[in-house]
Each structure stands twice: as structure tokens, then as C-alpha cells.
Length: 237
Image (cartoon, rainbow, N blue to C red; front, side, top):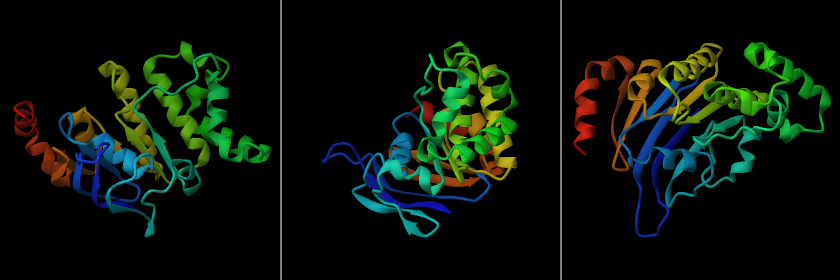
């Protein structure tokens, strides 16, 4: 479905943050990408989503080469990117924020109505709070609002970059529960996370990056066995 092959990329000509990194994202599964700080996780997401053109390598979507495709074209392909930074508009209502997800078909009022009802069915709390200011929501609910807004395009894949950064554990769990529920509904998810335990817990397949390179990949069960030693090694980097 989505794959990145032999990606070499960086922000300065002389420095390659990613060095021949490859991942394959399986359909209707959660693929988790983990690694210590500076390993290149977010850079990989920027390459996949068209924010950064790689020096070499390919990003493929259903066999079509998307390498260097402008980021504004991703939504039309069914690719929804959820960045690490908070992106809600705090002074707009919850519903106004959700409706912004329909920007690419903003003139199709009938479709907007259908998608809005579908999204409210997925996120009933958003329906309950639709008249509230987005800035009045908790941090976790704001992140879920971002997911709800992204679901307005009926995406085929959701790409989440550090979705729980800065959130308290009990609030972060609400976000992880939402991601798992969307996977159960058939959505494909690519997750990058610093929370190694949760990324492994909910991931169907896990990739580890270290200093811009693939170190190892495998199933959740394989990683759970060696989780303690893995984190201990990272703390020594």
C-alpha cells in the first residue's frame, strides 16, 4: 500500500539524516516507527508526506511513485497527515474545526454534510462538544479533534507523528484508544512515537531507526520480549 524504499534525505547538503531507510506499511494495520531522539523518525514522515524531497529513494503509494509529490496533493490521494504540533484553531468551535477538514471539497455542501455525520458517528464526543470553542478542550481532546478533522476526507491511511507528545499518560491513553479503534474499523495507520511501550503495544509491525538507519523490524511479540534491553541501549547512545 505505502512504502518508502532506500530513502536518503536531510536538510543540509552535506548531512544525510536518513541513510537508505526503508519501511512497508501494511493495509488495515498499525505500523509503528520508533527510535531514540535524532534517529530520523520525523524526517522520514516529512519525506513520505511530501514536505521534504529526498536526495534519493522512492515513496510508493499503491505502486505509484509519489517521491517529491507536493504535500497539498496528498489529501486527494486519501493520505491524512497528523503533525506533532497542535493544529486546532482555538477560537473556532469544534464543528468549525472539523469542517475545515473538507477544504478540498468545500463547495460540495452535500458531501460535507454526509462526511460530517459520518465523522460525528465515529467521534460522538465531538458531536456533543460541537458548539464549544476548540481551545476549551483538554489537550487529548484537541488531538482527537485533529483526527476527526482529518477523517473528513475519508482517508485510506492516517499518518501520526508523535500524537501524544506533551500529554499526561491518562490523557494519552484516550488518543491511543482512538487510533486502535480506527484500525479496527479498517483504517491503515503509520505511527511515529517516542512512547516506545505504547507504540509497540498497539503496533502490528514495528520498525526501529537508529542514527538515520534501519536497525531492525518485526512483530509486536518479537519486540515485547526485548523491550527492556532495547530502551537500555538507547539511553546509552
